Picture (cartoon, rainbow, N blue to C red):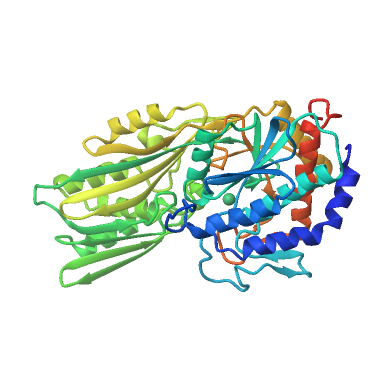
Length: 471
Ligand SMILES: [Zn+2]
């Protein structure tokens, strides 16, 4: 590919500078904090942006009120935008390394630190890719813009603000997902269901499961009155006959009160088939007790609509799939029930063949008499696989890595979910678990260098004078 050799050599020569900048960025704990003047997401995300914009010296930079910042390659209108973020999630527990000191382990070629992969490493690579184009004096016929956000991890209010104030380039990718290219992201609905009990026939004193809407709940606990211990045991034994494997279930009796604790396995709501839903299993046990009254009816309904082991929404009548996006997923993720009230949360990811409004309408119908309200609904995101933009990125990926370039469809949303025509291009390589959001997050130095090389080639292939529309 044209300019590849020069770009590769330039990046090798400037590797230490790249690592110095990355180390400076990693040293900032750019977790969301309290808003202040010139710091809409707290002081540290703003500090990370300051450091990055200082490092962009020599390019025309712009600070969009500390929500985001940008750097332009030249004075031409940008055709390509690269969108990366400088905020991080909290470090959490279990680190072997200092999360805020960039540490290199030569034996494994890994650079450790919070944000090395997500997304400060790729942001740094983007800047050095642009420096390579400038310093090598590669003649360009279009501009390139780097955009650095500071709120991706907490709802992307940075991007929303940017899009209100500025116009995005026609082609935008974010190195904040996976290689080769993510071009399809399912739609997402979050539903809140509720009902009141006033018939004084309750048998569940307390039922609690799940902590977050976007995960399969790993635990579910119930405290019951007016039920026989033996009936609960029989219910579990009967379920054992229906399933090859059931979640670990503990039953206790104390002073006439029966407690049930179910331990399942968590999984992200975009891939619920990887988990074991403790909540839906507990619903099966409770339903098998055939209790009367409003509580008993609601339990029966929920148990029918969310059968243990089902993740495609079939029992709610919303199952759907298409060849591009795969199957709809539904997770009943959180429940909070007392003798007087119940609240339940659902996370639904749906393919491009569905619309959010149809799904919500359907769910409202099947869930009555429970009240069902949509607390969030995002339509699917899809960029044409055969566009010049996507084909160019896939070609670069194949050429540089020697791996097969293909488009990916995912259930989660990336930074470009609301950007028409946007895709994610890297920066996680297939088969590499970089411990994103976990302890000992890392990026391989080799991968960081490849990120920069591929980003520079995307700039030349799409925007250089010699480019013939891409490939
Ligand atoms: Zn990210």
